[in-house]
Length: 267
Image 1 (tube, rainbow, N blue to C red):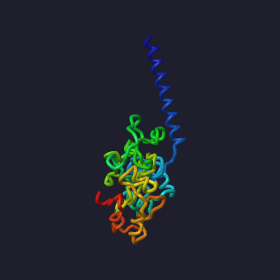
Image 2 (cartoon, rainbow, N blue to C red; image 1 turned 90 degrees about the vertical axis):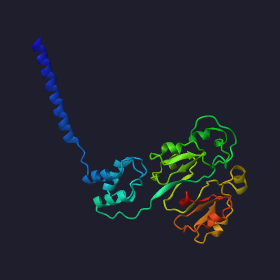
Image 3 (cartoon, one colour; image 1 turned 120 degrees about the vertical axis):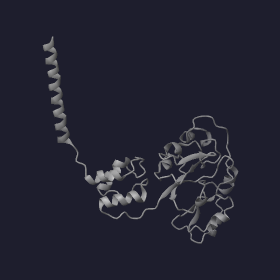
Image 4 (tube, one colour; image 1 turned 120 degrees about the horizontal axis):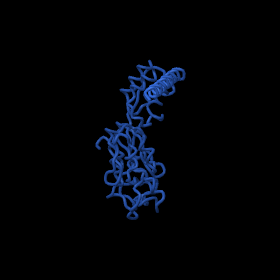
């Protein structure tokens, strides 16, 4: 009886040793060599794996930077400080980068925007394509307010306030997840230091806009006529500001009859 137990124990031990040796041999034989620079770059990246850089997580970006396939300032979360550290690792100049934040192009909150009907159902923005009129909101371009962008944000930088999404620019990392999540494509990236932006996405004509929202752009061109730097233009019945040209004079916002050009620095 004891002999049988000893023999069984020896067999198990020898088998374990053989398997262990095989695994060690295999790990050395088939291991993938990792570029030391790639490991160093990965160590400097924030590790959020948000995908805002366009790669599948921080490891994907680190590999691309190490191969010279991506710039050292590609990470929107790390910003300039991380870019500087990675540039030192790669032995290159970090270059200049402008911090960006998400901006929701809608001011049609519960008081300003009309609803066509009372909705009870799945609280998903993407589900509205399957309900009458594309959702209860009368404006076909406005924020639906169900918060898929909120769920998508890994930094808790966007919330639904009074029926529309609002971005906390101090928390936003410009990863772009909210932009991808919005089925109405009404969230854009603007420079953190931007002065003004148009909080409307409607391409309807002025009279149609006024029927559904008191805070919608009516495409009157008054803002365009006031701008001395040629930074704002009305296209498809909606005004949009070229942030590279805007000087922050505020004349467009002063003249806007619907007050949909927001002073971002005052928010």
